Length: 336
Image (cartoon, rainbow, N blue to C red; front, side, top):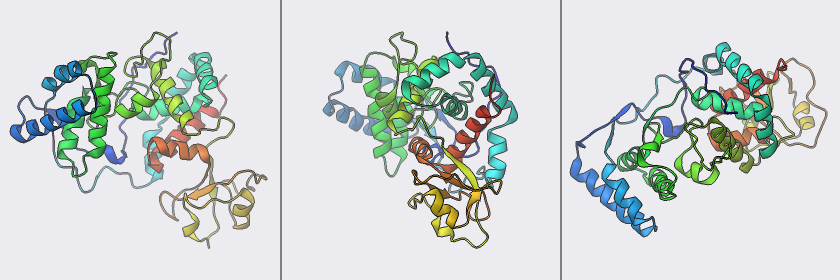
């Protein structure tokens, strides 16, 4: 059975990762700086040859690459949320939760099979899908080679974008996909789970056994690929992600850091409690960290290793907390 992609609203993410800060862009038939960009393409073409990418792939792809016009990334994104208190309700809406729970209930068997195969709880896989693309309903579609080549051309530090450009070429080189099928957002992230081309090469999966790895149109492929990435990032299937906590009024905020790890007993001795004021778990077999994404006046969380795995995906606490919050809404109340 193929998971259905719901027809639903386009959820607007208020915070984007660093590579998502570019302003709206369009493809130009004739680049405004044709000589310079074409010269840069010639350099990329030679590098592609030196990397051993098939000549036929290069000769087919490069004539189709156009300058992807974009303005300079803003110094300050005025759409950034004031705090998690405003971000979470806007991102994980009640409608979003209702949709996620309905999908989970309808496709429970497939999701649990997927979770068992990769060792990742289904609620986290489904939550990632929801946050990244609104369950496949919020996708943008630009030629990834044009996007990544243009970003490398515009960037003062082009190496990241160049690596993604060559990764996209290697996807074409595998003869599994045509140029026009390799589509991305304006920052080069692809498909229902917003993989970069290099992530696709390393982690894309054939979730339904048809011989393809189609993270754009095949939901099972997309979800299996997300699960494979988390598994590779040391996801622990028997643990959760963390918990919201309270700290005493007089507390050293310098202890709120991913680099500081303590046992639950040690945190308890410093005055931390569960959010409802009850004692932290009575176990010392884990070392966990305290984070305060909005500073001492905002929400506080003790986070576990699985949270760190989400940060490997996207180095944003707002992103990770939105995924975990949606996963909690899938867990409670239990779906029957």
